[in-house]
Structure formats: structure tokens, C-alpha cells
Length: 546
Image 1 (tube, helix red, strand yellow):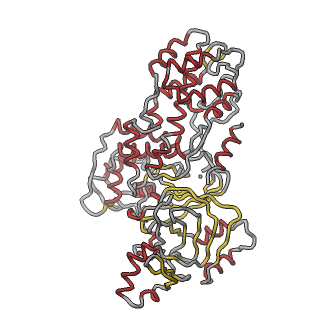
Image 2 (spheres, rainbow, N blue to C red):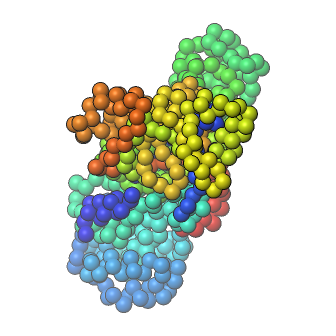
Image 3 (cartoon, helix red, strand yellow):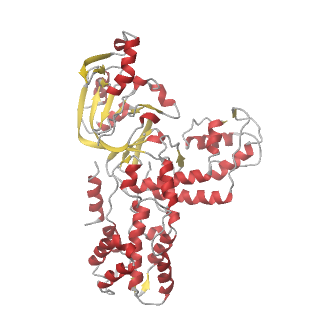
């Protein structure tokens, strides 16, 4: 099976850097029932995977594999993969050419020996044996033990660096996006057949991984050279035109982080510093006003080791995602409070969203938009009826009428309440449904002011979008009967109408607190649901289940 066909198959099996304070403006969430393509640097990573030996004359006896696994039992879980790989090659050497180790062997050895560069703190087995075999390989001639050790280490590396921790771990961390599936033995077999330098060097991991890895190296180096001592400001904010003894410290820090590129000595708050602060604020999800205020200082003072942990955590999440999709799809990044609309790897547009409060968290999962409902009713969840609607009805006799609500029946001792379609409806003028067991969907909202907040966790779990008309137009772009005028009319009709999409659109509700945007800029966001720390602990301890 070709790599392309293999990838298409597992992509199709998925049902995929990288989302009112008034309770009744939320939809409620039920309990769980059940850039352009980024180019890799010219580094050795171009050769794993890359161009391996395609020779077929030098072969070894298949019984060597049996004795190898017996001598190195930690490789037993990879027996089938190694066996399948060599059966297809008819037991020809993959890491030797004319009796000499090929370049990729040294590259793999280096990468396996330096797994922390991948953000992995778990060691590969038999490291000393590998060291010894490679050291003694300078003599000409094939070495079946080194050949098998390198292939076994390839599969170990694939599991640790490209596949990541087990699905048991990701589910325990409330990550319900489907995990990617790559048959690494077929992947290795495919790339070994590639001749010359013509094939692109692409690793089987979501593109953000490589970009974050580059920043991991930068931040580790910066951490080794700088104590990163915190500083404070004496008043609420320092603004353009002011002078302050803290300004040189701010300029120096912004320079090291790559936001500022000018003189770091003087204590004048000039326009260059204001521009740098806006850049820093934007990539940290702050209001980018160019002021040196308390929130900005707090982000500037975040320890580098904390940033490194964020990079490690989000690199691990990248390992779990599919490589790409060659279709339209939506991504909501919860900590970013953004919805991103893609076609393949091209970002088409983005808008702000409101996500669930800490006590009503939006679930990280995958769905497929199947229905668009114009002028929707809002069927108030029983939990909200019990905790909010009934107490309000007791206080005000006209509460239901004022909120444009009606009782349609009774169930389990509670009234069944719904809010009528219209501009005051908590779902706004349109909602987008992707059937799931979490009772989460995308929808409009009458509470437009919340989209201007820098932190937008206000809902009961559903996701409110700033540009619902634009999203409806995008989803219906291939439906000639649905012109923009008709969409606008349906949203304002006050009569509920459901449109079924003949082609479902994937939507990924994701959670990334560090990511690279399409301007190749590193972004950080607050861990609003406290998902990062547990995963960081698993990574840094080396005890995570792989």
C-alpha cells in the first residue's frame, strides 16, 4: 500500500498548529455520555525519513532477527514491524551500501541519542549497545547486529517522537480528538524505496511539531544564558513618552524574545518600544495597546522554564494529530478563543469565539458539521432550567414572557422550556450542529460585546462565533440555492429552518497553549482549563505511557 493511500485511509477513518456573563446567553453543555506548507530546515531531519539504501544484493538470514529479539527483549513489541519491513525487502540491508553505513544511520543515531531535543524525556533502550556498535562500525563490512539495532531504534524513535504517548494518556487528559494512525513499517518501507534527492523530506507528524521544536531549542539556550529575573512597574502602566528605569529591562527582554530590534540602553518609551509591545501583546493574547501595563509585565515575567514546558506539552499534542486534510475544515483553539477556517493547509479566515467557563469547560473533540439551523429555538437544558430558570420564575411572574420563552411540556419533574427564535434568542440567528455526545455546537449570540474581551470563557460549553453569517456563507458556498441574500433572509425570518449539508465539514475543537501562526510567529496562551501541568509532569518525569 502506498503512503498516500495509507494516509487517505486513516484520514477517512476520522469522523482534523493549533476556538455572557448573563447565564441565559449560553447554550448549556451536557455530561459526556459515552500556512502554506512549512518547509523544514536544511538539517539532518531531511533524511529521517529521507533517502535510504535501496541496494538489494547484500542480505542476511531471517533467523538473525529471532536471535536479535531474544538478545534484546525490550524490542519485542516491535517484532512484527521489523519482520514485516524486512520481509518486503527480502532481508536486504537497509542501513548499509557497499558495506558502509549510509549517512542516515548516523543521523538516526544522533537523534535517538538526543531525544530531549524532540521534547521527549524517555530514553531509548540499549543506548550503550547502540553506541558501541556504531563506534565499531568504521571497519568496512555489513554488521547484521547494527543493521537490526538501527531498524529497531527507528521504530522506537517513531513511537516516542512521532506517535507520542498512548491514547490512554490523551483520553485521561480529556483529549477526545481521534489519534492519528500511521503504519510506520510501511512508511519506512516507502521511503527506503525513494531514490536520489528528489523526494521531499516530510516527517509523519503535524507540521506545528517541527516549528515548535525549533523554538524549544531557542528557549533552552536562552534559559541557559539568562536568569530571567522578574521586574515590576510602580504605577498602573507606563505609556509612550514616559521615562522609567524599568524601560531598559523591558527593551532587553523584548530583544531576547525577538519582539524588539533597536537600542536597549536608553530609558525612553519611544514608538519602537510601543510597536514591540503591541507585537508581544498580540502573540500572548493580550489587548495590544502598546502600553506597559500589569498584564503585559506579568507575561514578560513568565519564567523561561514555564515557556519550555508549554512548548513540550504542545509538541506532544501535535504528535496526536493527523498530518493534514485535503478538504475544508474548521478548527476551534480553545485557549486562543479563535475559530480558524481552512482548506487543506491554507488558512482562509479566522474570527473570535466565546468558549466555556472553567466550570463549564468546552470539550476537546472532533465532529462533522451536518446541519445549519436558521432562526433556531433554544431548547434550554434541564440543568439550566433547574438552577436558573425556575428560581427566576419564582422571583418574577413575567420572566418567561420577558425572555421570549415558553413551556412546551414536562419531563422528570421539570418544565420543558424553549426560547423562541429572534434577535434576543441566546443562540442568536443561526446555529451549526455536529451531532456529538457532549451537546456542543457552534452558534451566534446576541451578546456581541463579549467578543472584544481578551479572555472569552463565558459560555456553558457551547461555542459562540463572532461571524456566523460568514460561516454560513462559507458552508453553503457549493449550494447554488443558498445565495447570501437567502441566508440573510433565513437568519432574520423568525421561523426555524434546518439545512442538511450533503457533504459534512470536519470541525476540530482543539487545545493549544503554544503554537506558530501563519506569520511564523510563536504564540502563547493561558492554560484556561489547567490541562497543561499534568501532561508536562508526565513528559518531564519520563514516566508517561508510550
